[in-house]
Image (tube, rainbow, N blue to C red; front, side, top):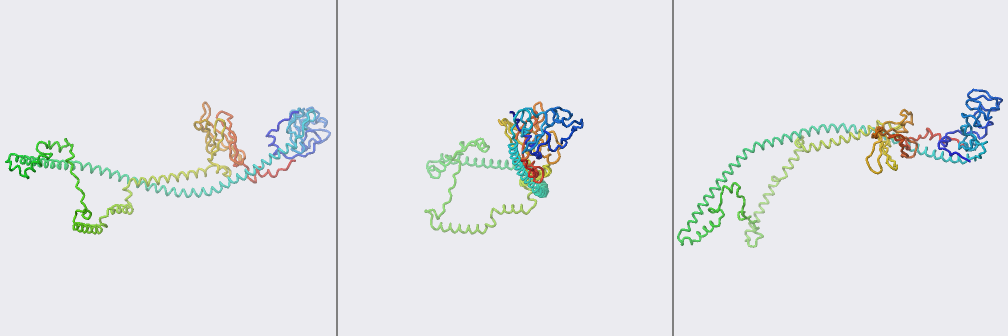
Length: 526
């Protein structure tokens, strides 16, 4: 016994089929609703091609052009056979499938094989149970999907009022920010001009002072050089005179004063020919100095009150002097405080409006901060206006999902759809992201003129990266009702043309309309 598998399309068809009476027609293969087949002496073909005697109906010979005289046999190619399916839903099949030795799933009562010798079991009760469970699951899905879609709609409605208020507020703020930027730009330009003029004036003054300063330095150098030479000449003459004492009588040379003078002259670094060339020293040709030429630092004076060798009277005098000096310093401190200049300059900047024009760096910082604030306001306002102008569904049900991204992995690629924005593909093994297109319109690839809610059940993404020797990549995303937004599958039926199937509550029928409302009104066919 062969039984055809029940196709998924049949189960969907059964969901929308009306219940039929369990009583069988007096004519095999005819629905009870078709009264044209009521018993009489004659039968008229449904296409009115002929009038036949009643005995010609189901005589296994096709007399009518439309095959209507053979509803219960396979004699006519165009005929149809009605399965009553008692306890379930009656359905029709092509007459050619009657008595073909196969148990057709549409005829769960097995009535299509009444004369083939094949014993088809009656599976109507089991099929009805499966159908009932599927219908209940579908009803649950539709109800939950409708609730979630309503939340999407409510979000968009509430967000629209908030968005309009934000747009009004940002528009006002942006107008004020633009005025502030324009004013600060004027200040910045004036401050930079002041800075440039000040730098130019300083450079000019420096250039004008150079010749006079150089002349002054040269004159001072010449005078110092003349004085040094005069001192050296006098010293050499004195040294020669003192050395001449060596020629005096020994009694004179033994005088302590003479001995000390001669020793001092002999030990001096600049005495006579050992002094070197003074011009070379002054002009820097002999710049080396001995450590002996460096004057010793004078020791710090010792406080007589600390020095053990100092008399007590000295300590008393020093203390009186220090106290008097401190009193004088305390009285003069308000007038000699070094912070007065800084305080004055700060107060002048805050009181004088023109002070900022003299601070180019401060003016630039203030302008840059104001300009950044203005650009941030422009960006935020543009984003709100973009959302407000977008077609995001009949009731803006796609607003909450706008630009939200969802991914799907297959063995080779990761696909990503950012709602109403873009579609991309990225190799899982690594590599650059490939654009499958940006959002171009609602509707399917083959139908851009869908009307009503169904229009928003599909998105087209076009003008992606071009294929090698092929068209630019594009993607068609088709949605069905679901309790979450999710990509189910990705296919490439044609080169670089992708079809993506997904689910989302955004396409579910809302409560009170469509399938969500009618699902509770269906009659139980069992």
